[in-house]
View 1 (tube, one colour):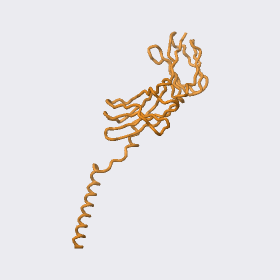
View 2 (cartoon, helix red, strand yellow; view 1 turned 90 degrees about the horizontal axis):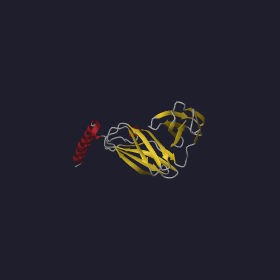
View 3 (cartoon, one colour; view 1 turned 180 degrees about the vertical axis):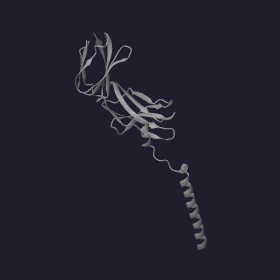
Length: 211
């Protein structure tokens, strides 16, 4: 009885070892590694801007994505608990994406982009913090302007001056302090002065007249 038992045990052990070696050679049987961090590279250049007190524009680029995958825009009031703001299904080979949040929370909001692939791959963008109570810290004068436009700001800002056709005529980056823009090359007429505050992520547009 004991002899039969040990023979059976030995045969079973040999079969088990052979099966294990076969699985080691066949990569299709291996458990897939976690893709949570591997997929994070798909979401790049995630940024946002506050167009007014009721709209937050979210923009990002993506690489190595597949048609039929999803982007899920998530929002949080504390950076821990998130809710879904919108879902974008990928239907082409575009690399740039955007979504408007027309109902942001009051105060400070946190945003992130979740990537969900058809194969179960998941990745997250970096998290952005948006302060809806902040204002763009700048003043400009004179308006109408002749040759020089004076900008006073306490934040790092970027400024664009656009004509009535929407073409950017002047594009400048400014640090805090008093700055001067030469607008003598602009024709007489009406323009849009677009200011992006890099500290509050807020963008505002003002009408500018040129004499």
